[in-house]
Image 1 (spheres, rainbow, N blue to C red):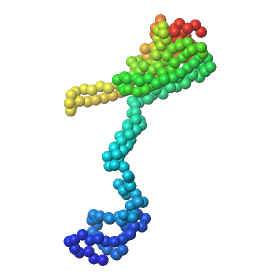
Image 2: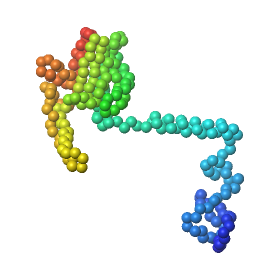
Image 3: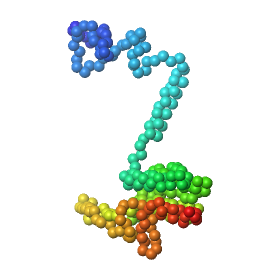
Image 4: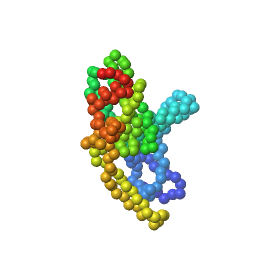
Length: 242
C-alpha cells in the first residue's frame, strides 16, 4: 500500500504481543509520529495509564492521588539511608562491640537496658545507643553512652555517668598517625603537599588498640577497659559498694 497524500490517513491493524501489525503491507517514514486509537471494548484490560472506571467525584479522585504521592514522598525520605562520616561509622562499630562485651560480662548479674540518643558534633549528626545498668532489685547504677567520635588525642569518647559523678573512656591506638598537610603560596602558585607521620602517644600503658580509662595520677596512665575496671568506675560514679 502506497501512501502519498497531504491528509491524515487511517490504517487498520491488530495487536500481537503488544506490537501493532497493519492489515496491509505499508512503508512509513522512519521516526514518524502516529496516533493509535484503541477501541472502547479493549480499554478494560489494556493497562493504559489513565483508563479506569471510578464512580467517585473528580475532586475526591484528585485528592486521593495527591495524598498517595505525599505519603510516598514521606516514606522515601524516611527510608533514605544516612550518609554518615566514615569516622562516625567506625566509632559506632566500636561502641556497639563494647556494649556487647558489657552485656556478656554481666548477664544475670545486673539489669541492662538500651535506648537511642541523638549526638551532634562538628563532623555530623547521628543516633547512638545508650546503655543503662541497674541492680537486679532495680537500683540505678550508671548510664554508659557515647559522647563524640572526633576527640583530641583519641578516636572516640564514652561517658560513664552515675548520680554522684562521671568518668570517661577513650578509644586509643597503640600506634597512631596524623595526616600532615602543608601548603605554600597563594592562588595559582599555591603548592600543597601531604604526609603521614607518627603521632606521639601522650599516655602511658597503651599496648593494643581499645577503650581506655585515663588515670590522672601520677603520670596520666591509660588502663585498658575490662569487667573489673567497669565495676570500679561504677562504684566511683554511683557510690555503690559491690
